[in-house]
Image (cartoon, rainbow, N blue to C red; front, side, top):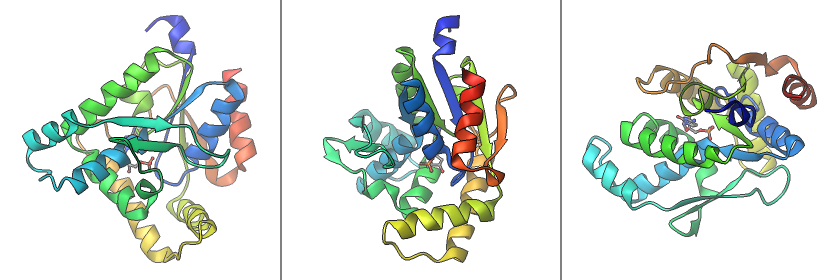
Amino acid sequence: MSDTCRERIVTIDGPAGVGKSTISRRVSTSLSFTYLDTGAMYRAVGLKLKEAGVDLADAGAVRDCLDAISLKLLPARAGNDDVGVLLDGRDVSQEIRSPEMSMIASTVSALPAVREKLTLMQQEIGMAGQIVAEGRDTGTVVFPGAAWKFYLDAAPRIRMQRRAEQLRSQGKLVNEDELLTMIVKRDHDDQSRSIAPLCKAVDAVVIDTGLLSIDEVTEALLSRIQ
Ligand code: DC
């Protein structure tokens, strides 16, 4: 990766509910970079495999299903919305954001065929440069040469409370104990899978978002990049 390209890629990794999406959206807007939500891609692939009823233990069947996939990221409709996804031409932006789809995305993200396919797609998107990539392995595996790498972290209970507020603001009922159990399980699964587990790149700047406001975290990232 050339120096010019390195300078044009920002990676923001970390566990679920740490504020990555909000921060990534703000940083990308400030820099006029494209926001690449890699989690949305794992969610869409999870939905595809689930709907196709593919046996996840059958690597050939998983590959065949992914060969036929069409995946397009859509810009967020409003400033605070998540990015959208067109899966095989169908808008699945809402469907992929449920707690159930979070768990399915985490499960399918451990499959080698899924990681190979999505890592390549993400690297192709990144070739044009000027992106803020958000996920679990963007600084370690997808863009190891990126110049600006961040790892956001916060205690599980704080992350659960943030996610609960977000779900409530969408009119959803929340069971906090269940949500905390899901977050802890997803952390464990994402960190312990054998390929591209969630972990901090050695050259990433670590920021504990539990003690800071969104504005403060955004400022901390931008001040390092600029
Ligand atoms: O960021 P998110 O909650 O939308 O991600 C959903 C799941 O997708 C997450 O639990 C693990 C997986 N994922 C991944 O394995 N690698 C990424 N770069 C992004 C997400």
